[in-house]
Image (tube, each protein chain N blue to C red):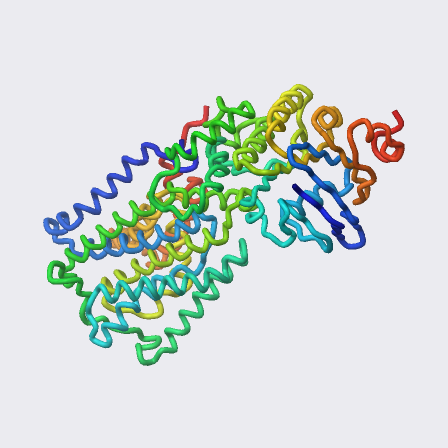
Length: 244
Length: 331
């Protein structure tokens, strides 16, 4: 579904992404792990279109999307969540998710009908909030809810876009254990009918969710495989998992 | 539901303002203070202009320091045809819409590539270009401006030469503009504009080509301001490049901030307070001097008081006058 071919990105003298090849198949969760500064976010930003690669190609559903704008990619079915929560803070949770629904309902050059009581938007937004367990907070302003709820909102907005591929950039970032467990349960539910490219620090989460794992170190993929393969790989153990 | 579009008891005040607008000609008839018909015509015209600017500043987060250009272009769309003895108001209106729309489309397409202070500077630069273009047009009076001998003619049913008819026409246009902006900002389009003000990057990642929406918003705002300019030309019966001086753009921003940005009715109150202070403060000083208390206050003092008052409202009433009206007591 998503094919990343020989992707390169250099910042000054540092190769943040160094000849990366990655293939995400339909209906799998492919996780990318790696130490801080390994280039994970740089990689996902290039997939989402916010950063242009120096070389290489990104193919999505068989099409070359390397030079598409982020908004174009989003409409093609690529949704991302942000590592550092990035939502419309003065809007309510429902309004935030409604925006995601609105984006796939055709153009928004509609100047007359009030969006606030547009069932076409609200019903589906409520479903997405429900899926992450936020429906009882729908009318709270995003600025005022907790960090954990922000993380859930990120996911709700991404799934409300009904994407073909979800790019999740450290969805558990900064969450407590209890919250993380709940979010893993949510993602387990979502993964039944979605393809996901997941970047995550939380090893328990990665090993309980992922079908495939790639290990990124200094911009290079040093291993790709199933959970057991990755656990057993000595190079990975040395570079990342520690000696344990 | 609309956390960011407050609905509060300030509505009472705003309804009151509309009632005052509606009844002003009656008051003028009884009191004989014809002066106030002029003042309030002016307030309503500038309210429409500030309303259109609020669409950019308040809802879209696009701080334009060149909005007076649209006011001027709109006014010249009356002045120049009248110079050639074309008095049909519908032609004036069509000209104003097309001229302001095209100008907004071209300058917006360039300005909206920038953000923040660069956007402010580039809109200012475009407005100055228009200003100096009209200054150099000797045919149309250049620096000295142009007298509009006859006002726009919209048909036999409406005689704008009659000041009260002009007043109520402006009033009607103001109400229509308020209603139009209200629908606009609550519709899907308005949501995209607001969303892009709050978090443009996220809106793009959701799939919105925010640049296009912002550009359309800029064009709509420019056209609305052009219509205000059309009435300003008719109202003053004299137009000059002075109308689109950059200080006028600054005044419009002040009206928006004074009333409360991103509040539908804010610019109307902002324009009203701004103009009334401008009128009343010199009168108050003349009055005090007339009391014969010894030392005479310099007449120009009113400028200082004016400035301090404006700063105080903005500083202490965060969210402008609307902020003052809706402030909740802290627990």
